[in-house]
Length: 235
Image 1 (cartoon, helix red, strand yellow):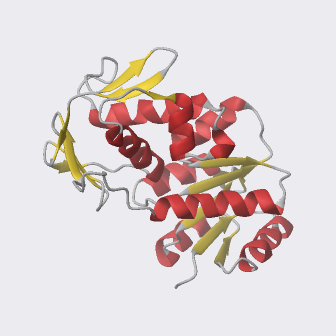
Image 2: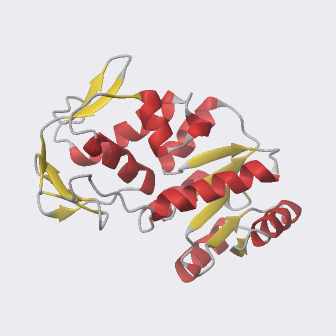
């Protein structure tokens, strides 16, 4: 089995070295970038399976790099930052990050977050009936190949957006609570963070609904959660 490829984007050499050693001890291949410019080059050439990003880079904000990365890569992004304000976390998630870890952090938590992102990125979610292709409105989703189209045109979803959509599809129209979605998509460590779900649901509506402000398929059940309406199996 090939080793997972990780790209660390961090301008502080000591922290970068510490993370590298921690991940290499877990059998991962690690590449380093000390700036956003270097990260762009390495992300394209190394094709990492996970990118770890510090928001405070010397040549730009980490969120800008994440937005650029999201334009062409589905690799999960784990943000490391000393910024502990909720607004910072929300903005990082809106930029396309999949998880957010506040400095200082312990090695066990870092490893657990990294492994969780790698594991979820590798899962092929197939509906229990055996039908991997489903549709709602003019949107078609193949859970086995991760392909999403709208009116026949490809739609780019981030890994988290795809997993959230897949969870709603597997619910077959049932209301899924914030907690259920958080556990399914992000894992136990995020069960009390409903704003994660709201941020990504907004992104999904922008990409998949004709009128995001008045959705017909990605429906909010106030103070409970969300459901997917109008799902057809078989695409």
